Length: 344
Image 1 (cartoon, rainbow, N blue to C red):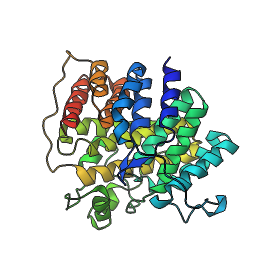
Image 2: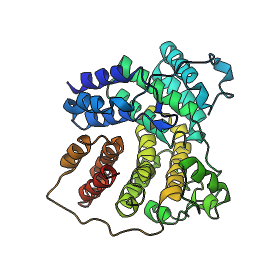
Image 3: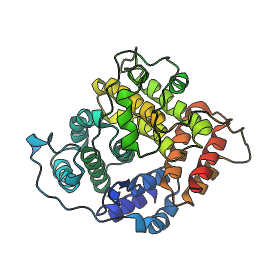
Image 4: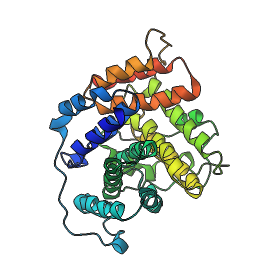
């Protein structure tokens, strides 16, 4: 039942655009994948019905992108329709893994695309494809790649040194904040180039070979999840991406060759550090206490009952962290995040 529901949902959303109102992301494909993956497929169509007024039509193309001339339109949102058409053609002609492997290193330097929603949408699509390969899931991967390409946005270059500690939680605590947090993410990320401490904080992850990359990536995800419990109160939606962006990279790893794992880890850490620098408050609040009255399944039900996709996607990521650690505070962190996001 759940497999068919996901494909039905992707078909419903196939002709919608990746954005609305000129910048805001279409979260529906990501949210429904998380809902189905977590066993809430029965709520998917009802949730899409409630989200329908946030959907816009798929943009039309302007001019076809030639296969050898992909660099010029990279990062040009005006060409979003052209990128959608481009990846439709690419995925019609060869296996999805081949397309992903060719485009992953091209897109990875622009991981900030669409406030990291480009890589997040690709990560959800890859997880669905690894579960079962179907035509709607392949098409959804193409839409995610197209969105990433259209909004491709590199971060300020990190330094060559390691981040301050092999402990990802301490490393996140050491990330400096941008001085002006009044405006949107593009204005905030633009300040990274002049931010003292950014090159060292976002520098290459040391001592990583392909064998330990999944463990290191998982540690970054987990650190961002726990930090949302103390710092998420300031910008609960935007700080979700500090966890969901590296988790999207982690979910894509099984479909990628090991030669791409280390640069994936480095880009994921830079993305988490950038979101943290852009939106974290100066001071944290006490972490919520463990609450055995509520399970993560119950928290996900609460998230599904909200129209806010970020709540669904964050609880989905918290479930991964809980699987690794079993930390009893995680259901409370997830519940607090749902309350904070729903209150906006």
